[in-house]
Length: 151
Image: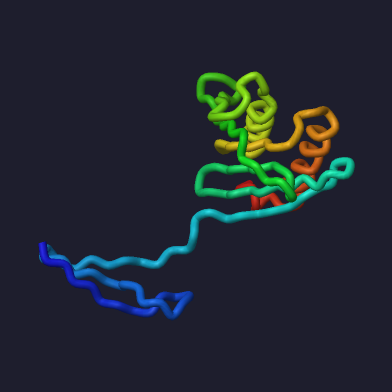
């Protein structure tokens, strides 16, 4: 197979990119597309701790990272999806402490509200003070900016 390419300037930089390819079987083209992942960040104070939220809105799902702004970690991940067999969403712990179901429960509540699969990484203490403040802030943010959550 013989391949040749036609260079051009990319839409956002002076770097050379390829706009079309020619294959021995016929011409092919490459189209520029907008990124399909949108990022939204916000935070809240819980006691003396600043809790950071990062929402990655993807085509058909949401990824939510919750953690410390000063000491970010990624020690926990759960996912929940709607079930066609039950009114309750189905959740699974992907990694982290298997005896702590906090992120699984949070992802299930968010699936009910948002209607799409939700991944939750909860990297702050799972005590009552933190959880109440986190859920309140999430409710405020989903109401104030539903487009950031795919609503």
